[in-house]
Image (cartoon, one colour):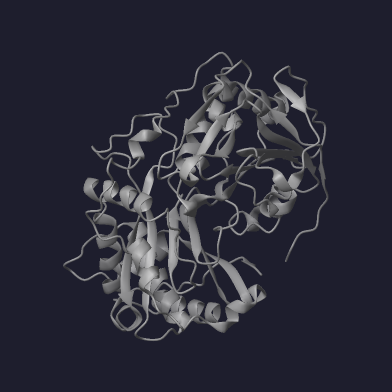
Length: 488
Protein backbone atom coordinates (compact mmCIF):
# COMPACT_ATOMS: atom_id res chain seq x y z
CA UNK A 1 0.00 0.00 0.00
CA UNK A 2 1.40 3.38 -1.01
CA UNK A 3 2.54 5.86 1.63
CA UNK A 4 1.40 9.46 1.39
CA UNK A 5 3.76 12.21 2.49
CA UNK A 6 4.69 15.79 1.76
CA UNK A 7 7.88 16.80 -0.05
CA UNK A 8 8.87 20.47 -0.32
CA UNK A 9 11.38 21.31 -3.04
CA UNK A 10 13.69 24.29 -3.15
CA UNK A 11 14.52 26.08 -6.37
CA UNK A 12 17.09 24.33 -8.54
CA UNK A 13 20.57 25.80 -8.83
CA UNK A 14 23.62 25.12 -10.95
CA UNK A 15 26.81 23.94 -9.25
CA UNK A 16 29.86 24.93 -11.26
CA UNK A 17 33.46 23.72 -10.75
CA UNK A 18 35.08 25.27 -7.65
CA UNK A 19 38.04 26.48 -9.76
CA UNK A 20 38.47 27.56 -13.39
CA UNK A 21 38.57 24.61 -15.80
CA UNK A 22 39.59 24.23 -19.47
CA UNK A 23 37.11 25.49 -22.05
CA UNK A 24 37.34 23.00 -24.87
CA UNK A 25 35.38 20.56 -26.99
CA UNK A 26 36.02 16.89 -26.30
CA UNK A 27 34.97 13.95 -28.48
CA UNK A 28 33.10 10.97 -27.09
CA UNK A 29 34.02 7.39 -27.96
CA UNK A 30 32.08 5.49 -30.60
CA UNK A 31 30.57 3.45 -27.76
CA UNK A 32 29.43 6.62 -25.98
CA UNK A 33 28.01 7.91 -29.26
CA UNK A 34 25.63 5.00 -29.88
CA UNK A 35 22.05 6.07 -30.49
CA UNK A 36 20.99 3.35 -28.06
CA UNK A 37 22.65 5.28 -25.20
CA UNK A 38 21.05 8.65 -25.79
CA UNK A 39 18.92 8.72 -22.67
CA UNK A 40 19.17 9.66 -19.00
CA UNK A 41 19.68 7.15 -16.18
CA UNK A 42 18.12 7.85 -12.74
CA UNK A 43 19.80 6.38 -9.65
CA UNK A 44 18.85 6.62 -5.98
CA UNK A 45 20.59 6.03 -2.64
CA UNK A 46 18.95 5.66 0.80
CA UNK A 47 21.01 6.38 3.92
CA UNK A 48 19.95 5.44 7.45
CA UNK A 49 20.24 7.88 10.31
CA UNK A 50 23.77 8.32 11.61
CA UNK A 51 25.05 10.71 14.27
CA UNK A 52 27.35 12.24 11.67
CA UNK A 53 24.25 13.48 9.84
CA UNK A 54 23.53 15.63 12.91
CA UNK A 55 27.11 16.78 13.34
CA UNK A 56 27.50 17.76 9.69
CA UNK A 57 25.41 19.60 7.16
CA UNK A 58 25.10 16.69 4.70
CA UNK A 59 23.50 18.75 1.95
CA UNK A 60 26.23 21.37 2.19
CA UNK A 61 28.93 18.69 2.40
CA UNK A 62 27.73 17.00 -0.79
CA UNK A 63 27.18 20.30 -2.56
CA UNK A 64 30.67 21.61 -1.83
CA UNK A 65 32.30 18.26 -2.62
CA UNK A 66 30.51 18.10 -5.98
CA UNK A 67 31.86 21.56 -6.88
CA UNK A 68 35.41 20.45 -6.03
CA UNK A 69 35.05 17.10 -7.80
CA UNK A 70 33.91 18.93 -10.95
CA UNK A 71 37.32 20.56 -11.14
CA UNK A 72 38.65 17.11 -12.05
CA UNK A 73 35.53 15.87 -13.84
CA UNK A 74 34.88 19.15 -15.63
CA UNK A 75 33.30 17.61 -18.77
CA UNK A 76 30.31 16.74 -16.54
CA UNK A 77 29.75 20.49 -16.11
CA UNK A 78 29.51 20.98 -19.87
CA UNK A 79 26.84 20.32 -22.48
CA UNK A 80 26.51 17.90 -25.38
CA UNK A 81 26.52 19.42 -28.85
CA UNK A 82 26.09 17.91 -32.30
CA UNK A 83 29.17 17.63 -34.45
CA UNK A 84 29.74 16.44 -38.02
CA UNK A 85 28.27 13.12 -39.21
CA UNK A 86 25.68 13.09 -36.41
CA UNK A 87 28.43 12.66 -33.83
CA UNK A 88 27.85 14.22 -30.44
CA UNK A 89 30.63 16.06 -28.62
CA UNK A 90 31.11 17.49 -25.13
CA UNK A 91 31.38 21.25 -25.00
CA UNK A 92 33.24 21.93 -21.74
CA UNK A 93 31.52 25.19 -20.83
CA UNK A 94 31.63 24.88 -17.01
CA UNK A 95 27.92 25.77 -16.92
CA UNK A 96 27.47 23.25 -14.13
CA UNK A 97 25.25 20.41 -12.96
CA UNK A 98 21.77 20.93 -11.56
CA UNK A 99 21.38 20.66 -7.80
CA UNK A 100 18.16 20.75 -5.81
CA UNK A 101 17.38 20.40 -2.12
CA UNK A 102 14.13 18.98 -0.76
CA UNK A 103 12.43 18.27 2.55
CA UNK A 104 10.40 15.07 2.91
CA UNK A 105 8.04 14.40 5.79
CA UNK A 106 8.54 10.65 5.80
CA UNK A 107 10.80 8.13 7.54
CA UNK A 108 12.94 5.39 6.03
CA UNK A 109 10.87 2.75 7.79
CA UNK A 110 7.88 3.90 5.70
CA UNK A 111 9.92 3.62 2.50
CA UNK A 112 11.81 0.41 3.20
CA UNK A 113 9.45 -1.84 1.24
CA UNK A 114 9.82 0.44 -1.79
CA UNK A 115 13.64 0.59 -1.86
CA UNK A 116 14.02 -1.10 -5.21
CA UNK A 117 13.00 -0.44 -8.78
CA UNK A 118 10.52 0.68 -9.81
CA UNK A 119 10.59 3.26 -7.00
CA UNK A 120 7.01 4.61 -6.83
CA UNK A 121 8.04 8.04 -5.48
CA UNK A 122 10.56 8.91 -8.19
CA UNK A 123 8.84 12.21 -9.01
CA UNK A 124 9.08 13.30 -5.37
CA UNK A 125 12.79 12.50 -5.00
CA UNK A 126 13.87 13.41 -8.55
CA UNK A 127 11.62 16.22 -9.69
CA UNK A 128 10.33 15.85 -13.24
CA UNK A 129 13.50 14.03 -14.27
CA UNK A 130 11.59 11.22 -15.96
CA UNK A 131 9.79 13.76 -18.18
CA UNK A 132 12.92 15.24 -19.70
CA UNK A 133 13.91 14.04 -23.16
CA UNK A 134 16.61 16.57 -23.92
CA UNK A 135 20.05 15.14 -24.76
CA UNK A 136 21.79 18.08 -26.41
CA UNK A 137 22.41 21.45 -24.78
CA UNK A 138 21.17 20.33 -21.36
CA UNK A 139 22.93 19.66 -18.04
CA UNK A 140 24.56 16.24 -18.02
CA UNK A 141 23.81 15.54 -14.38
CA UNK A 142 21.06 16.41 -11.95
CA UNK A 143 21.65 16.13 -8.21
CA UNK A 144 18.54 16.53 -6.18
CA UNK A 145 19.05 16.80 -2.44
CA UNK A 146 15.98 16.55 -0.28
CA UNK A 147 15.68 17.02 3.46
CA UNK A 148 12.97 17.23 6.08
CA UNK A 149 13.96 19.86 8.59
CA UNK A 150 16.66 22.11 10.08
CA UNK A 151 18.77 22.08 6.93
CA UNK A 152 19.87 25.10 4.97
CA UNK A 153 22.16 25.43 2.02
CA UNK A 154 25.28 27.40 2.81
CA UNK A 155 26.29 29.98 0.23
CA UNK A 156 29.28 29.25 -1.95
CA UNK A 157 31.14 31.29 -4.52
CA UNK A 158 31.23 28.22 -6.77
CA UNK A 159 27.43 28.00 -7.05
CA UNK A 160 24.93 30.27 -8.72
CA UNK A 161 21.16 30.18 -8.45
CA UNK A 162 19.04 30.03 -11.61
CA UNK A 163 15.40 29.53 -12.48
CA UNK A 164 15.78 26.18 -14.25
CA UNK A 165 13.13 24.62 -16.48
CA UNK A 166 12.59 21.18 -14.83
CA UNK A 167 11.73 19.63 -18.18
CA UNK A 168 15.25 20.29 -19.44
CA UNK A 169 17.41 19.14 -16.57
CA UNK A 170 19.41 16.18 -15.55
CA UNK A 171 19.72 16.24 -11.77
CA UNK A 172 21.05 15.09 -8.45
CA UNK A 173 18.86 15.43 -5.38
CA UNK A 174 19.54 14.93 -1.69
CA UNK A 175 16.53 14.53 0.59
CA UNK A 176 16.58 14.68 4.38
CA UNK A 177 13.92 12.62 6.17
CA UNK A 178 12.09 13.16 9.46
CA UNK A 179 13.83 10.10 10.89
CA UNK A 180 17.18 11.77 10.24
CA UNK A 181 17.93 9.68 7.16
CA UNK A 182 18.99 10.92 3.77
CA UNK A 183 18.01 10.21 0.16
CA UNK A 184 20.34 11.09 -2.69
CA UNK A 185 18.89 10.91 -6.20
CA UNK A 186 21.00 11.35 -9.31
CA UNK A 187 20.30 11.45 -12.98
CA UNK A 188 23.06 11.27 -15.57
CA UNK A 189 23.20 11.40 -19.34
CA UNK A 190 24.21 7.87 -20.40
CA UNK A 191 26.16 9.20 -23.39
CA UNK A 192 28.93 10.50 -21.15
CA UNK A 193 29.25 7.69 -18.58
CA UNK A 194 27.89 4.31 -17.59
CA UNK A 195 27.06 3.27 -14.02
CA UNK A 196 30.70 2.35 -13.36
CA UNK A 197 31.83 5.83 -14.40
CA UNK A 198 29.13 7.45 -12.26
CA UNK A 199 30.23 5.35 -9.27
CA UNK A 200 33.80 6.56 -9.81
CA UNK A 201 32.59 10.17 -9.74
CA UNK A 202 30.53 9.56 -6.59
CA UNK A 203 33.55 7.99 -4.92
CA UNK A 204 35.52 11.11 -5.80
CA UNK A 205 32.79 13.23 -4.18
CA UNK A 206 32.94 10.87 -1.19
CA UNK A 207 36.71 11.25 -0.82
CA UNK A 208 36.51 15.04 -1.00
CA UNK A 209 33.58 15.15 1.43
CA UNK A 210 35.80 13.46 4.04
CA UNK A 211 38.97 15.40 3.17
CA UNK A 212 38.16 18.64 1.31
CA UNK A 213 41.83 19.25 0.46
CA UNK A 214 42.34 15.86 -1.17
CA UNK A 215 42.40 14.95 -4.86
CA UNK A 216 40.29 12.00 -6.00
CA UNK A 217 41.95 8.64 -6.47
CA UNK A 218 42.07 7.42 -9.12
CA UNK A 219 42.25 10.65 -11.08
CA UNK A 220 39.74 10.73 -13.95
CA UNK A 221 41.01 9.74 -17.40
CA UNK A 222 39.25 10.80 -20.61
CA UNK A 223 41.01 9.00 -23.51
CA UNK A 224 37.74 8.19 -25.28
CA UNK A 225 39.66 7.41 -28.47
CA UNK A 226 40.54 4.04 -26.93
CA UNK A 227 37.01 2.85 -27.70
CA UNK A 228 36.65 4.40 -31.12
CA UNK A 229 36.54 2.70 -34.51
CA UNK A 230 39.61 1.65 -36.43
CA UNK A 231 40.63 3.47 -39.58
CA UNK A 232 39.28 2.08 -41.77
CA UNK A 233 36.64 0.24 -39.74
CA UNK A 234 35.99 -3.40 -40.57
CA UNK A 235 33.76 -6.09 -39.10
CA UNK A 236 35.19 -9.51 -38.23
CA UNK A 237 32.44 -11.01 -36.02
CA UNK A 238 28.72 -11.68 -36.20
CA UNK A 239 26.78 -9.11 -34.18
CA UNK A 240 23.35 -10.54 -33.46
CA UNK A 241 22.65 -7.73 -31.02
CA UNK A 242 22.07 -5.56 -34.10
CA UNK A 243 21.41 -7.94 -36.99
CA UNK A 244 18.61 -10.11 -35.62
CA UNK A 245 16.13 -7.25 -35.41
CA UNK A 246 17.03 -6.11 -38.91
CA UNK A 247 16.33 -9.60 -40.30
CA UNK A 248 13.21 -10.26 -38.25
CA UNK A 249 9.88 -10.44 -40.05
CA UNK A 250 7.96 -10.73 -36.81
CA UNK A 251 4.20 -10.30 -36.99
CA UNK A 252 3.56 -11.87 -33.61
CA UNK A 253 3.99 -8.80 -31.41
CA UNK A 254 1.09 -8.75 -28.94
CA UNK A 255 -1.52 -6.16 -29.87
CA UNK A 256 -1.80 -5.42 -26.17
CA UNK A 257 1.27 -3.20 -26.66
CA UNK A 258 -0.96 -0.64 -28.37
CA UNK A 259 -1.85 0.56 -24.86
CA UNK A 260 1.00 1.20 -22.42
CA UNK A 261 -1.48 0.98 -19.55
CA UNK A 262 -1.59 -2.77 -20.13
CA UNK A 263 2.05 -3.08 -19.11
CA UNK A 264 3.12 -3.77 -15.54
CA UNK A 265 6.62 -3.67 -14.08
CA UNK A 266 7.51 -5.93 -11.17
CA UNK A 267 10.68 -6.52 -9.25
CA UNK A 268 11.95 -10.01 -8.35
CA UNK A 269 14.54 -10.84 -5.69
CA UNK A 270 17.14 -13.58 -5.87
CA UNK A 271 19.01 -14.21 -2.63
CA UNK A 272 21.10 -17.13 -1.43
CA UNK A 273 18.11 -19.47 -1.04
CA UNK A 274 16.78 -18.72 -4.53
CA UNK A 275 20.21 -19.21 -6.11
CA UNK A 276 20.60 -22.52 -4.30
CA UNK A 277 17.22 -23.64 -5.64
CA UNK A 278 18.17 -22.74 -9.22
CA UNK A 279 21.50 -24.56 -8.88
CA UNK A 280 19.56 -27.79 -8.37
CA UNK A 281 18.89 -27.78 -12.11
CA UNK A 282 22.59 -27.96 -12.97
CA UNK A 283 23.69 -31.35 -14.31
CA UNK A 284 26.93 -32.99 -13.09
CA UNK A 285 28.88 -31.74 -16.10
CA UNK A 286 28.12 -28.09 -15.14
CA UNK A 287 29.18 -27.91 -11.50
CA UNK A 288 29.21 -24.12 -11.35
CA UNK A 289 27.58 -21.07 -12.92
CA UNK A 290 27.63 -17.45 -11.80
CA UNK A 291 24.65 -15.83 -10.13
CA UNK A 292 24.24 -13.58 -13.16
CA UNK A 293 24.17 -16.54 -15.56
CA UNK A 294 21.71 -18.55 -13.45
CA UNK A 295 19.24 -15.73 -12.90
CA UNK A 296 19.47 -14.38 -16.44
CA UNK A 297 18.87 -17.78 -18.04
CA UNK A 298 15.92 -18.48 -15.76
CA UNK A 299 14.25 -15.09 -16.28
CA UNK A 300 14.84 -15.02 -20.05
CA UNK A 301 13.35 -18.49 -20.55
CA UNK A 302 10.41 -17.85 -18.19
CA UNK A 303 9.74 -14.47 -19.79
CA UNK A 304 9.67 -15.99 -23.28
CA UNK A 305 7.31 -18.78 -22.16
CA UNK A 306 5.02 -16.17 -20.57
CA UNK A 307 4.71 -14.17 -23.80
CA UNK A 308 3.30 -17.17 -25.71
CA UNK A 309 5.01 -16.23 -28.96
CA UNK A 310 4.99 -18.03 -32.31
CA UNK A 311 7.17 -21.15 -31.86
CA UNK A 312 9.19 -20.27 -34.98
CA UNK A 313 9.86 -16.69 -33.85
CA UNK A 314 13.48 -15.70 -33.12
CA UNK A 315 14.12 -14.02 -29.79
CA UNK A 316 17.27 -12.38 -28.46
CA UNK A 317 18.77 -11.68 -25.08
CA UNK A 318 21.15 -8.73 -25.34
CA UNK A 319 23.31 -7.80 -22.37
CA UNK A 320 26.15 -5.40 -21.66
CA UNK A 321 29.60 -6.90 -21.06
CA UNK A 322 32.25 -4.80 -19.34
CA UNK A 323 35.46 -4.48 -21.36
CA UNK A 324 37.63 -3.37 -18.45
CA UNK A 325 40.42 -5.83 -17.84
CA UNK A 326 40.91 -6.64 -21.51
CA UNK A 327 44.42 -6.18 -22.87
CA UNK A 328 43.13 -4.59 -26.07
CA UNK A 329 41.81 -2.03 -25.75
CA UNK A 330 43.52 -1.48 -22.41
CA UNK A 331 41.45 0.99 -20.43
CA UNK A 332 43.50 2.88 -17.82
CA UNK A 333 42.48 3.19 -14.20
CA UNK A 334 40.27 6.24 -13.89
CA UNK A 335 38.53 5.85 -17.27
CA UNK A 336 34.90 6.95 -16.77
CA UNK A 337 33.32 6.64 -20.19
CA UNK A 338 30.98 3.87 -21.26
CA UNK A 339 33.17 0.79 -20.97
CA UNK A 340 31.06 -2.03 -22.37
CA UNK A 341 29.87 -3.68 -25.55
CA UNK A 342 26.70 -5.67 -26.01
CA UNK A 343 26.46 -9.34 -26.88
CA UNK A 344 23.36 -11.32 -27.78
CA UNK A 345 22.08 -14.85 -27.20
CA UNK A 346 19.71 -15.97 -29.96
CA UNK A 347 17.16 -18.77 -30.10
CA UNK A 348 13.94 -19.86 -31.70
CA UNK A 349 11.05 -19.69 -29.27
CA UNK A 350 10.27 -23.41 -29.43
CA UNK A 351 13.89 -24.36 -28.69
CA UNK A 352 14.19 -21.95 -25.77
CA UNK A 353 10.84 -22.93 -24.23
CA UNK A 354 10.84 -26.68 -24.88
CA UNK A 355 14.44 -27.40 -23.95
CA UNK A 356 15.54 -27.46 -20.33
CA UNK A 357 16.81 -24.52 -18.31
CA UNK A 358 20.36 -25.68 -19.08
CA UNK A 359 19.84 -24.88 -22.78
CA UNK A 360 19.15 -21.24 -21.90
CA UNK A 361 22.07 -21.20 -19.47
CA UNK A 362 24.51 -22.37 -22.14
CA UNK A 363 23.30 -19.68 -24.54
CA UNK A 364 23.82 -16.99 -21.89
CA UNK A 365 27.32 -18.22 -21.09
CA UNK A 366 28.25 -18.48 -24.78
CA UNK A 367 27.12 -14.91 -25.46
CA UNK A 368 29.17 -13.60 -22.57
CA UNK A 369 32.31 -15.56 -23.45
CA UNK A 370 32.28 -14.51 -27.10
CA UNK A 371 33.24 -10.97 -26.07
CA UNK A 372 36.91 -11.26 -26.97
CA UNK A 373 39.25 -8.42 -27.82
CA UNK A 374 38.52 -9.00 -31.52
CA UNK A 375 34.76 -8.93 -30.84
CA UNK A 376 35.08 -5.58 -29.03
CA UNK A 377 36.88 -3.90 -31.93
CA UNK A 378 34.48 -5.47 -34.43
CA UNK A 379 31.43 -4.26 -32.44
CA UNK A 380 32.74 -0.68 -32.38
CA UNK A 381 33.43 -0.77 -36.13
CA UNK A 382 30.01 -2.31 -36.85
CA UNK A 383 28.35 0.50 -34.93
CA UNK A 384 30.09 3.13 -37.07
CA UNK A 385 29.63 1.37 -40.41
CA UNK A 386 25.90 0.78 -39.86
CA UNK A 387 24.94 4.28 -38.73
CA UNK A 388 24.96 3.68 -34.97
CA UNK A 389 21.99 1.28 -34.86
CA UNK A 390 19.95 1.15 -31.70
CA UNK A 391 18.85 -1.92 -29.79
CA UNK A 392 15.65 -3.85 -30.37
CA UNK A 393 12.48 -2.22 -29.07
CA UNK A 394 10.36 -5.33 -29.57
CA UNK A 395 8.79 -6.88 -26.50
CA UNK A 396 9.86 -10.36 -27.58
CA UNK A 397 13.52 -9.36 -27.13
CA UNK A 398 15.06 -8.69 -23.73
CA UNK A 399 17.90 -6.23 -23.08
CA UNK A 400 19.66 -6.07 -19.75
CA UNK A 401 22.56 -4.50 -17.90
CA UNK A 402 23.99 -5.61 -14.56
CA UNK A 403 24.58 -2.61 -12.29
CA UNK A 404 24.68 -4.71 -9.12
CA UNK A 405 28.48 -4.61 -8.92
CA UNK A 406 29.20 -1.04 -9.98
CA UNK A 407 29.91 0.05 -6.39
CA UNK A 408 27.20 2.70 -6.14
CA UNK A 409 25.80 0.90 -3.10
CA UNK A 410 29.24 1.09 -1.44
CA UNK A 411 29.69 4.88 -1.60
CA UNK A 412 30.18 6.44 1.85
CA UNK A 413 30.11 10.23 2.20
CA UNK A 414 30.99 10.02 5.88
CA UNK A 415 27.75 8.69 7.38
CA UNK A 416 27.84 5.07 6.25
CA UNK A 417 26.97 3.08 3.14
CA UNK A 418 23.47 3.26 1.67
CA UNK A 419 20.81 0.67 2.45
CA UNK A 420 20.10 0.64 -1.26
CA UNK A 421 22.04 2.28 -4.05
CA UNK A 422 21.09 1.59 -7.63
CA UNK A 423 18.71 2.14 -10.49
CA UNK A 424 15.45 3.93 -9.72
CA UNK A 425 13.06 2.83 -12.47
CA UNK A 426 14.29 -0.61 -13.55
CA UNK A 427 15.08 0.35 -17.14
CA UNK A 428 14.48 3.08 -19.73
CA UNK A 429 12.17 0.97 -21.95
CA UNK A 430 9.68 -1.82 -21.39
CA UNK A 431 11.99 -4.50 -22.84
CA UNK A 432 15.08 -3.35 -20.95
CA UNK A 433 16.10 -4.22 -17.38
CA UNK A 434 18.91 -3.08 -15.10
CA UNK A 435 19.96 -5.40 -12.29
CA UNK A 436 20.74 -3.92 -8.89
CA UNK A 437 21.62 -5.20 -5.43
CA UNK A 438 19.64 -4.91 -2.21
CA UNK A 439 21.07 -5.63 1.22
CA UNK A 440 18.62 -6.75 3.92
CA UNK A 441 18.83 -6.00 7.64
CA UNK A 442 20.92 -9.14 8.20
CA UNK A 443 23.50 -7.96 5.66
CA UNK A 444 22.56 -10.55 3.03
CA UNK A 445 22.57 -9.47 -0.60
CA UNK A 446 19.85 -10.11 -3.15
CA UNK A 447 19.99 -9.57 -6.88
CA UNK A 448 17.06 -7.35 -7.86
CA UNK A 449 15.63 -8.03 -11.34
CA UNK A 450 12.91 -5.76 -12.78
CA UNK A 451 10.59 -7.27 -15.39
CA UNK A 452 8.05 -5.40 -17.52
CA UNK A 453 5.31 -7.33 -19.32
CA UNK A 454 1.66 -7.08 -20.32
CA UNK A 455 -0.61 -7.94 -17.38
CA UNK A 456 -1.61 -11.36 -18.68
CA UNK A 457 1.99 -12.26 -19.54
CA UNK A 458 3.13 -11.14 -16.09
CA UNK A 459 0.70 -13.58 -14.51
CA UNK A 460 2.13 -16.33 -16.71
CA UNK A 461 5.66 -15.27 -15.83
CA UNK A 462 5.05 -15.43 -12.09
CA UNK A 463 3.49 -18.88 -12.40
CA UNK A 464 6.46 -20.10 -14.43
CA UNK A 465 8.95 -18.68 -11.94
CA UNK A 466 7.11 -20.22 -9.01
CA UNK A 467 6.99 -23.56 -10.80
CA UNK A 468 10.72 -23.44 -11.42
CA UNK A 469 11.69 -22.49 -7.87
CA UNK A 470 8.91 -23.56 -5.48
CA UNK A 471 8.59 -27.16 -6.68
CA UNK A 472 11.03 -29.32 -4.68
CA UNK A 473 14.00 -30.12 -6.91
CA UNK A 474 16.38 -32.98 -6.17
CA UNK A 475 15.43 -33.05 -2.52
CA UNK A 476 15.12 -29.27 -2.11
CA UNK A 477 12.10 -28.50 0.08
CA UNK A 478 12.42 -24.72 0.06
CA UNK A 479 9.43 -22.96 -1.45
CA UNK A 480 9.81 -19.52 -2.98
CA UNK A 481 7.23 -16.80 -3.14
CA UNK A 482 8.50 -13.81 -5.12
CA UNK A 483 8.58 -10.52 -3.28
CA UNK A 484 7.43 -7.98 -5.81
CA UNK A 485 6.61 -4.34 -6.15
CA UNK A 486 4.49 -3.34 -9.15
CA UNK A 487 3.94 -0.09 -10.97
CA UNK A 488 1.49 0.34 -13.82
